[in-house]
Image 1 (cartoon, one colour):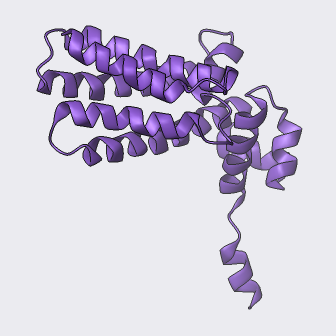
Image 2 (tube, helix red, strand yellow):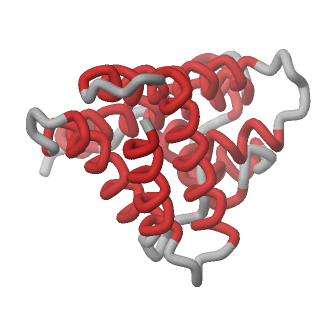
Image 3 (cartoon, helix red, strand yellow):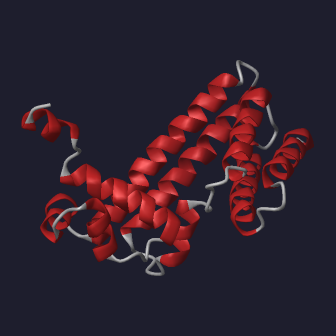
Length: 192
């Protein structure tokens, strides 16, 4: 293997910073120190400022990247539900069940970031809000397809259940949060 091939195979500083920050902020929270991120990424401090403008910019990008991946995961789940809106919604809760029962599940990075970053104007909050709004909208669209008489309210209720399952999955892993969430979601769909 030539030196050029080795260099091409190793991710650049931006990707290493993102990867390190994603892992460390998930396992240790958004309060993890910059030095720990830099050490894990094996990059100089200058790279952080060059690529992200600082830790806040890095945190925003971490949330954006995670949200894009989670959105794709939910899109795939909905498509797996076929054409029936009820089955499509329940597929979201099947994915949620797998997420919260995973041995490496540490909670919801969006909720954790919102709670840790107490400045209401922190730019991460705009990203977490946008992610929640996206999830609300896809649930509402499926509820309209049922048709559900109160799709907006029901989407709020389903999102509340999702977030509750994510919190409970992290704080009470002995409880089958995913199955409980699925049962509650069925009640929302049946309540009409």
